[in-house]
Length: 287
Image 1 (cartoon, rainbow, N blue to C red):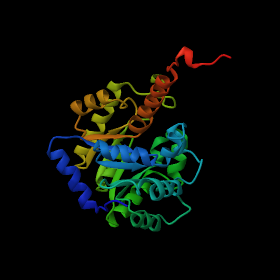
Image 2 (cartoon, rainbow, N blue to C red; image 1 turned 120 degrees about the vertical axis):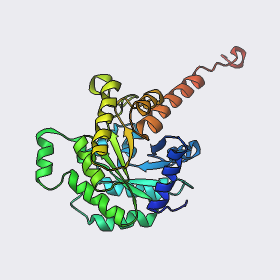
Image 3 (cartoon, rainbow, N blue to C red; image 1 turned 180 degrees about the vertical axis):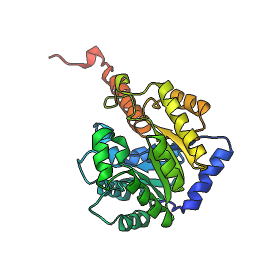
Image 4 (cartoon, helix red, strand yellow; image 1 turned 135 degrees about the vertical axis):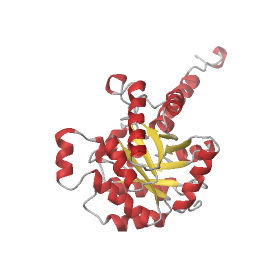
């Protein structure tokens, strides 16, 4: 088992990284090998989402939003049995379903801290839904504000807190709750075998403008959380670099873009290389 971190220790690590002029990078880990490689690569935070189990099983990450399992229990299993045992010196963040009405969130967060997670983020999040369905969720008391309340409890337990926000209003709500990091979410990540295509994703220009709007809203609310970006066309180093140059965002949260798409490409290419091997003709006995 690796190091344990208080909220202030995680904040200091990130602030020191930013003070040195480097972007904060957080990476999703759906397997132990992903976490080990991300740590070797120098990532600042390792994120454990229930979607990681689906993603690294060759299924769409959005499966983690739907009722294909107990999201909180899946994250606990992944963290306790796969990720935390192999991470040595990097804070690990748990994706917590804060609207879960079937358990005491405070007791669950106490367990999250007990097993060694350094912080939490609101995932799965109802923020991914919109329209009439979202209005129904909100009206029934299972909305975004309930996720923010979960994060407030986590902060009281000295856990580092992160909030996904799809809109300026959500970002302001998270900021006013003094959440440590606000992640501007630009939708399902593009690319790979189970990512969305261009026709269902924002363009890079519209995603950058979306980040700018969230940055402005947070600034106007007189709050200063660390602002990171995630999703949509922010699936390549080049697009993330462009966003960081064009906005006040201080870093990036990658999941599919860091652990799924590169693995798909590497395994396919390596397999093709092996499958292209030939044998000496005289080594095959046709008789």
